[in-house]
Length: 502
Image (tube, rainbow, N blue to C red; front, side, top):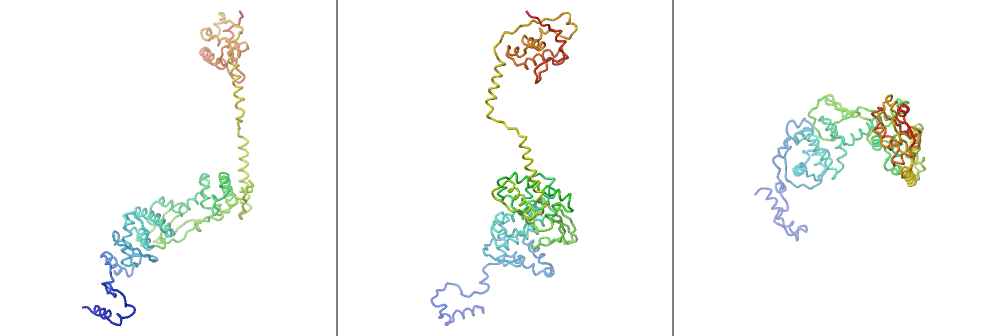
């Protein structure tokens, strides 16, 4: 029997201990009260984890960085999977493999297995950050593009369980694109880049439509436009006046000030040092690289001998208070102009800004008044009267045939050779002949039309069509003053037709 066994037996068989109040009346199970270290080691350590821990004791580990150790251990365990249930919560800052116990490591690699199979579950925050660090270092994936998609999707999905990770992950997503030189299109929905997009819209407002400018103002303004009671009541009016006010002020600054209105609101582009993947464990495999990377016109990165710098609009990325004051003044003046029930105090802006906004409001209402003055309104109550008048006119044109003086038409044989006239008896119908003679001698052509139940315009068109070959032109012009024979052909037609009574 080993020495430890002898000591345990002596302790447990001591009469004073057995008869003490602490043990009296207790029923013992078939297991020792005090255990050896080997008995306490309930779970065995997988060989792969043992080998990973041994990397900490390599000669290189003594002089290289902790980021190198994390990357080396991560690559070693890149495809390792475990099957171990770990449900305890714990906290560690900047967690890495070397900080975790065997049980915690086994729990992490089991959780990671499920995550890689699209079964994301809540886990202790150290597990979450270690997994994100692995993705930042491209551990477990063949290409940066594939790794970025997984990283972005995981960060989005895990917000359902803990949104605290968002504080870091959005900046890390941008750094990932820059460091691995991927397409900026992959991060257009990241808040910082969306902020840039709104800035660029206001910087180049003259290249964007009103809807885009309004949305950019709404996104950047500290004054919440869509919460305004006046905007909810008159959205189109508010929108138009606000956009025109912004344009007027921008034009004024361009003409009268050294700095643009955009710069006055948001500041200039400045360059500052940049720590790539700040607050993460990241091993830079290209420590002396030189490169440049542009996300957009106002957001760029440069790396010289491994030292990174970033150029972008200075200041924080929160809502802009100066722009918010402008929006509030527009809201206040519109309420005052229209005697809106709920008044709003004006923000503190310059007299010039106030005047320009007031001008935009006055111009808006002047334009509304001008448009309204040009509008044609139709009184629908008058339609019945118009219909009745039209019916009376139609009846007058379709009266029964009446007796009118009938004229005979014949051709003067002597004059026929002198004019380009074809015998009309072979071309015109009776009603057309009588209508043409009435026009020729200024008789009542309307009476002829009513007699035959036809419109004057229809008779005129019919005559023009039949005589076109003879004159190569129309002979009757039908205008607002009524039909008449064109003067150029009057004499020729008179030579062809002679009016005689029976």
